[in-house]
Length: 468
Image 1 (tube, rainbow, N blue to C red):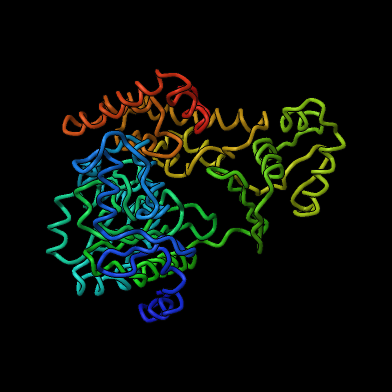
Image 2: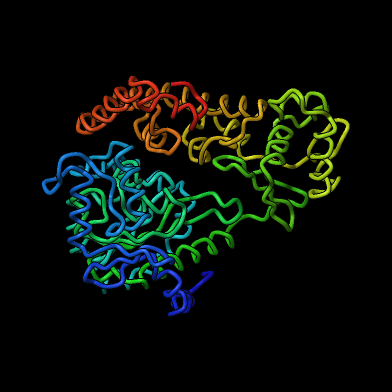
């Protein structure tokens, strides 16, 4: 194995705990530090009262004020707001989406399966001895493995903290694995900080696990239990396990052939270019250039490239040539050629992989490789067309297939949470037991979109590039 339990234990030193102590609970009594800057959540009772006020619960006055800070730390307050916007019910529960057969297939095909033996080695005894649970979910927040103390497993079933259930923030509100995926960093959530009331007896800490080569989020590792986890060491520990899992995946990954390169541009505004021996984070304009050239392997002439990159027709060819000169200096002439402008053979791109999977009918694989829209902040005409085309094809294939699990992956994503067409399809596809909750969320979204500029109109288009 790449790393031992002793190695990880060494990583969780007092120094590491000190670095994260501002983000997690400072005592079992419920004092939760909010950030390295010293924001502090109040007592458990104060946080619970703030939650009731925010969600309109029994202790709430009229109206729905924003969570006060203090007593609620900023990370939690922002997550509560996202939970409300996603129409999560504070009295609801996570939904189990995968049956045993579907779960087994999803586990077998998921890259995190290769890291599970290490995760169990590092966390198993700690979870059993402390009566905790360890959990690993995919990038969509669906639990792949939930293991640990038998008695705690029985209690967790009451809130559907089980393998096959979706615990993304947009589905289950504020919780450590879901919120860690939403914000892209390790998170600890204690007691009443959870958005859904059935979860407020628990404390959890989670950290995202990234694909070592591309930086793509694969899922998250979580530890869940009682007040005993309300300590800085819990977050430091789970963060160290996530890094160990990434090291294990890196060692197991195949070595790319010499001269190969890969462009990673989905779900990020600044693309990454992986070349032999180096990894480059590109500027927004350079990202747009490489996306267009990756899509056109035969090359693009200067005049056409100018129209594909710039909305402003007054931009001159001199400006484009200067950008290309800087990019060639960064990459080298062996990677970026001219006359016409083109990338070297062997350079691939993540959005092209998704496109090929769609063309072959591998919809689940295509969606699994799609962490978000292509350069979502770009307004370059050529990129906008590619982004809308890819998102539109994915969306149409999902609706046509009618698979409730795949539709839910899109609907509960950041870019799909306001996609009325997909929510309509999901409401028709889910089993009868799940239909009322999904239909309620669809109806709420439909009403908000119908409200026009004062509601949510246009937000879905901005996120996924597809008209709703």
